[in-house]
Structure formats: C-alpha cells, structure tokens
Image 1 (cartoon, rainbow over the protein chains, first blue to last red):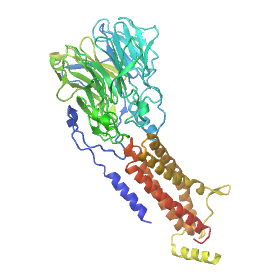
Image 2 (cartoon, chains in turn brown, green):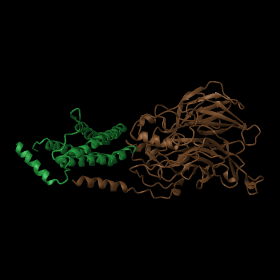
Image 3 (cartoon, one colour):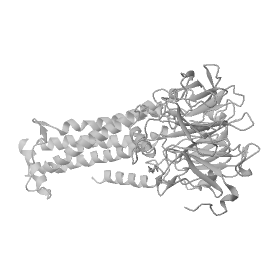
Image 4 (spheres, rainbow over the protein chains, first blue to last red):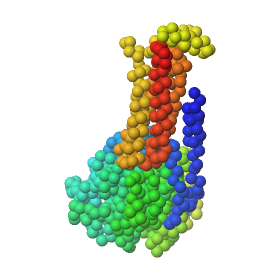
Length: 450
Length: 167
C-alpha cells in the first residue's frame, strides 16, 4: 500500500529540485553572451504584469538632460511610428483579432496569460477600434501636434510602414499594400493596391510584419515571425516564416533574404549603408536566461539557426527531426540584448539634437518579458555604435514603464522625427511619447513654477 | 462455496476496526442511475487514455511528428478529467463500501497514484517538442499506465469481494 505513495513523494522531490540558471544576466549582452545550459522547468516561469495605464501627468523616465512628453494619447494599441520629412508623424494602431486554432491543452492557458499582459482582462476601458494609421501634424513646429486625422482605416493588423517617393507601403499581417500618398495629405481615399501576399494563414502566431525600404527604394524587406515557439506547429507551418523576405515593389513576388530568425522586427537599414539590421525575439521555455534576444546586421541568404539551434551551433534539443546540416550553416548574431527582453523596435540615431555620443547608435524598444519571474526589458535601451558595429553594453534610456509590479505602458516601435527627437509607440499605454534633449537648460531653474 | 465466501468476509470484517457503524457491515449498493452503477462507466476512461498516451508517446519517440505529442497531451487531459470524475464517485463509494472498503481502498490508492503521476506528466508534455516525451514524458506515461492497470486489477477483485464471490 505504501509503495505508490513513495513513488509520488519521489516525484514531488524531483519536481522541487529545479536548479535555476544561476548566471548574471549582465553577462548576456554583446557579441559573446554567456549561454547557460537549457533548463526546462516543470512549469515554465511566467511573469506578466497588470496593465494600469498612465495617470494624468505620469510619464516614463528619461536620463538627466532629456525631456519626455506625450505626443499623442488616447490611441488604440499604437505599435509603430514613422516620422515623415515634412514633419508629419504616422502612427500605426494595430490589433490582431484573429484567434489561433487550438493545438494543445496549454494553448488556452498561454492565450489567457498573454491577454493579461496586453491589458485585455484587467482594469481600464477597452481600446476602441484599432487597425488604422493616424496622422499627426505639427503645423507651427513647436513639437506639439495641432492636427490629427485618420490617414487609412480598416487595415488588417498592420505593423510595417515605408514611404518610397509618393507611395506609402503598409505591411498588413497578410499582405503588403501600397497607397498613393503625397506629402501633406491627411486622408487617403484611393484604394489599396496589393503588392504581395505574406505568410499569414490560420495560425499566424507572430503576426507583426516589419517593413524597411532599401536606401535606393528598389526593394522592400519584410520580417515574418515564426508560427510558434520552437516549431511545435510542424515544418509546414513555417514555410517562408522566421525569415526576412525581399520584395521588389514593382513585382508580386518575394524571395527569402535571410532565414532562421525566429521573430524579426525593427527592420532598418544602417544610415548611409545598404546593410539591413533587425532585432530578433529568440525562443522561450528554456529557462529565465535562455535564449538572449538580439540585434544583428542581416547577411543576405544567411541562416541564423531557428528552430534547430541558437547562437550558431547551440542545438535546441526540443526540435526533432534534427538538422545537423543546417546547424552547421547557422551563424551567430552580432549582439545579444539579454534573454526575453522582447525587442520590437529599432531606430539608429541620425539626428543632431542629442549629444554626440548618440550619433549612429541604436535605440531598441523592449516590450518586456513574460517567460521570467524577474522582469526584463520594459524599456528603451541605447547601444552605441563604432564603425557601424555595436559596442559596449546596452544603456537604459527610457524606463519607468513597469512600476510597483504594474505596467503603465510597454514600448514597441521607435523612430526619429525631423528634429532628431525620439518617438516611442507605447501599445498598452495607448500613447506615443516624444523625447527631446534639453541639455544644459535642464540645469537651470525652471522658468515657471508649478 | 457460498459458505466459504461468507466465512472470508466475516473474518475480514473482524479485523477491520474502521467500519463506521452507521453504514452497516455489508455496505450499501453502488451509486447508480436508474439502477445502473456509475463507477464502472467512468473507470475505463483514465485507464484507456493513459495507455493511449503511452502508445502515442512511443510513436512520437520513434517518429517525432508533433501530431503524436498533441495526441498524448489531449489523452492525458481526457484521462485526468475522466479519472477526476471517477475519483469523486469512488470516494463516495468508499464511504458506502462498508466491509468491502479495504479492497476498494487498494484500488483507489493505485488509481490516485496514476492520476498524480499524470498531472506531473501533463506539465512535462507541455514542453515544446522532443523533451516533452523523451525521456521523462514517456517514462511517466509507462509508470502511470502500469499503476492504472494495477488499479484496474484491484477493482476487479474488489468487485468480486463485494459480490460475495471467491477470489
């Protein structure tokens, strides 16, 4: 009679023997991150935070000498932002309404956790209709918009934006479309012209399709995230996914530019070069300190490992059948950002209003972790560049999105406006923030008291 | 034959000091819906589902297509749900069993052990691929299948005791 209870007790002891990946997360920045052994817990670490939004007057925190204020509030899940040369700012408000088909018993649990992290089950008013592009205009140039209009409405979970000449390209989750768009226009009435269908389908797990126009305007690159964490949906579900596709805008075809990139976002050409960069969300459920997300220059036709391996030849034992031939080809990315930080936005500093040290460096919007009991990310970091390569460690630039275990907002897309100010799309905060440098004027007493 | 069976039963009752007086020595009839016992309908669900998960785990370990892991995960959920319902009825039956409780308790212990093992196994099976099955998942599936088979065997003998038949 006692034997089965001993078995059960033994199981409990085994389950309790979870050894953490005891490494310093600070060792996971840069070109050669520390990669501990994979550690699959009995129950994966989950750390999601109730979304409470920003109270009146509350803002994220910026370093001394900088100033942050809301450029637009009351948005509906703003995910991306693009500033135009004429000063207009386009904001992509986006929500993927599609429900993924049920595969495993864990799916509804994961969906519930993710919805909580996106503010869909807690307090606050549910955002109204999204999936549109809002245009902000600052006609007097004081940095505060005085006009706001819906440029295009009724889109399908849009994310990427690019302007080539008098054309606006929008990456919906299922297709790249083009609209005629003249600078100064505040509303587009012309119908969309579809350029090319993108992998979407019934699953469409990582749905954000990031877009970048090449410097010559001859091609657009689009990031396609994987359909699942580590190929649990099968190889067929990953055709042309976990990849960056290259599209000729005059054509209705694409070809794979680079692959093995689990969820590439923030596609941006390095200023003054034809080198494409992106930030990549690496895989989950291998422990709190695996696998570090990264920023990398994307080499044409290169394979970056997913799902078979990470950081070159570090094989993911979960993926079968294994592909040693592909693992042998897998290249290591340029620069690790830390595990589970969820980078979704990238902008290189090309302005001149920030101090000289920022020039040519990268701002990365880190949406923040879920697969970790200690939060990671939930901020915008800055990475200095020298000779077109990242150097040093990421420095916190904008913080304060997560306070007292509650999420005020979560940063996604980042961009620069024509004055060199940094714009940040904050999706659950339903705000776009603008950061300016006020330099030494900050040291003086404020001209007006409050 | 009849005489011998009753003799066994009486001796058993004498040794068991935990029979509540109110229930009566012989115990009550099994819980039933319009005369048909509930428990024998529910009991096969966990046994068959746990054995099924072992088979799909075995297939996955030989031909790792995620479909087989999905099958295993859902079979575990089905077995745990069916087993949970069976367990609730079985606990009620234990209170009603009277002098047959010991045989029934042995059945219950093995079934509960199988169920607890499969709870852990469900978490293992929630992993994303090969490590959901090899080595821990399929091992736990085998342990739980064995435990549930033993439970089933004890159920048969407990029922035989209750029916007053010789074992």
